Length: 295
Length: 88
Image (cartoon, rainbow over all chains, first blue to last red; front, side):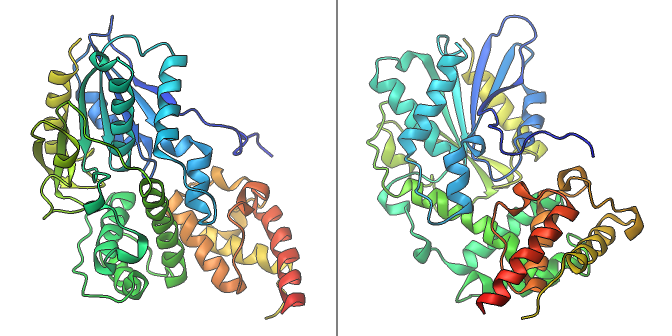
């Protein structure tokens, strides 16, 4: 029997995804929400200027956060705790003394916002050059949803996007109105098999398990966000919004309520889950981060 | 609900893995760790869902952590199956 790493061993929350070629002229810290692999950032990493160091803060490797997705009875993790953990990681690595840009993807943007709030609140606002949010939904009352209030067809449409991203194939499916997302899973299964995303013998029970895991992560994020009630920041926010955003019709996704400045919105191709792979989106994002992160 | 033996569970897992991986059942090493098979997380979850349907009960989320090979998981399934049938 071959040796393998202990799967229960802690995995690093902070890791260097791309080192600068020589002294770092730019530092970017990316908050990764954990739904997809951390390798999603690699295309962007490859497009950044040579003097850029890109670090990943992977929330999926915070044990309590992971457990809260697997077990709906497990307590939600306060946003403040996640932000504090990220700041502790940066301090322990001694990389929080030079200016940097923060970028948060999806739920990672909410944690990035709280990190910014903590820096601003502790007199360290000059450290943060820019705060960039990748299709994150603002933690404001008008945009918070309990599981019961999420539209079933919308949730299933998100799952279709997610499945396409996981299988690395284009996946399109019109979702009719549904009572529950699970009611539409037979449609998703048929289309996924027809479009070559899943083997022909895949059973509905298998797809149900995958959906349950996906929904568990979403529900965990909503539970973590529900009690979080931040005030606005005195700093500009940049929202990068893909063509197939989680909420395409919802403008800047509520972020104008959390900044005293106008929200800068940049529209890019791709969808919520593929936006770090889409060449057009990566090009825009790399230019944006290169400009914002200059030390 | 009928009790599933370790032999039956192992046969089911080996056949499913062989089909997913496009190999012969004889090529599936029951003592190899699951994460050493060329199976991504999506495929693993789908397989778990199909397994639970066949068993008629859900396995705990940590089952694969504590029983990380076909052989070990099959033994665990047999124990759980006996427990579920007894409780039914």
